[in-house]
Length: 413
Image (cartoon, rainbow, N blue to C red; front, side, top):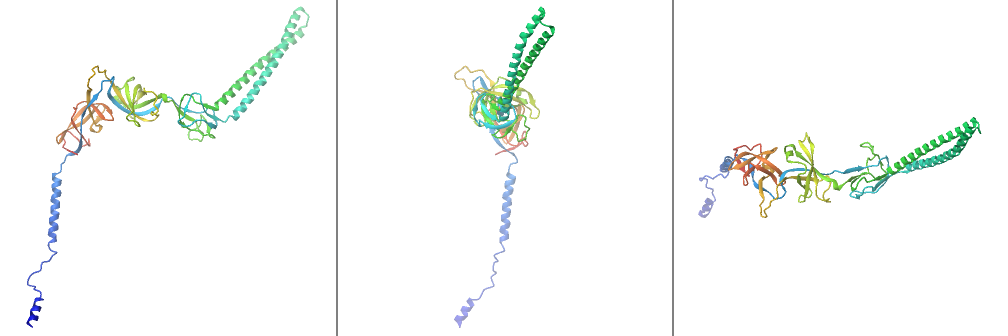
C-alpha cells in the first residue's frame, strides 16, 4: 500500500507555483522594433542634404590648328539639296505606252525616257502631209497657168501699140494674166499654210516622246504604262503630272538655317566643313555660296547656301541631313614645331544657358555654386566653345537651371 500511495502522490500536479503565460511579452518587443525603425528613419531624414542635385563637368582647353581654315566659329544643321532638279513631264496630255527608265538610273541629256500613245497624232500628221502634197500640186498648176498667160498678154500688149489687135482682145489677155497671177499667189499661200500645219503636227508627234532635259540620275518614277499624264493635271486627280524626277548630282549643296544672333559670323566665300549625319567621320570641304538676304520671322533664322567643293561623291545624296562648321580664318603657322593655340575652353552644351552670343554657367565652389556670364563661340558635336569667362579646369554644375542660383547649396551626384 505504501508503495502505491507514493506512486499516486508523484502523479499529482503542484499548483502552488504560478505558471508563466507565453503570449504576454510580444507587444513589448513589437513596440521596441517600431521605435527603432522610426529612430533610424529620423536619422536618415535629418542627416540628409538639402542641396540641389547636380552633375559636374570640367572645362577643357579648345585648340585650333595652324591652317588657313581655323577653328569652328559656328555650327548649323541642314540638308543636302540639288540646285538642278526637274520633274519631267510630257508637253501634251496622253496615255503612257512605254517607260524606259528606273529609279537610280543615270540618264544623258536628250535620252528618251518614255513614249505616249501617238496614234491620233500620226493620223493628223498623215492628213496634213496629204494637204501639203495637194497644195504643192495646186501651186504647180497655178504656176503653169501663169506661165502660159504671161507671153500672150505681153504679145497682145505689143500688138496693141502697132494696132494689130483690138483693145478688147488686149483686155481679155490682161484679165487672164491677172487671174493666173492671183491664183499663183493663192496657191503659194495655201502651200505655206499646209506646211505650217505639217510642222505643228510633227511637233505634236515629237511631244509624245519624253526626253531628259539634262544629264542626271532618276530619283523617282511616277508613271507606269497605261496611265494618263498631263502637265495641267489637277492635284489629287487620277491623271499623273510627270513621268519621273531627275537630279543633277553635280549641283548638290547644303542649305542650313543660321540664327540671327550669329549671322554676323558668316559671309560669302568663307570656308566650311560639312559632315553628313549618315557618315559622321566623313569631312567634306565646303564654301559659303550665298547668304540669302532675308530672315524667317517665325524661326528667327537666315538661310545659308554652302557649296560642296569636293568632287561628286556617291555617298552624298539629296535630302540627307548634314552639319556645317563655319571656319575662322587663321594665318598659316611658319614654325615647324608650332603648337596649337588655345582658342577658349570647351564645355558640354548642357552646362550653359545660351542667350544669343552670351551664356550663363554655374561654377562649383565646394558645396555652393557661382553664377557667371560668358561669351560663346562655335558649337559642334563635342560641345560649346567659351571664348571668355572660363579657364581650363573650371568645374561646372549641370542640372535644372530653374533651381540653380548664385550661392545655392548643391549635392553632387
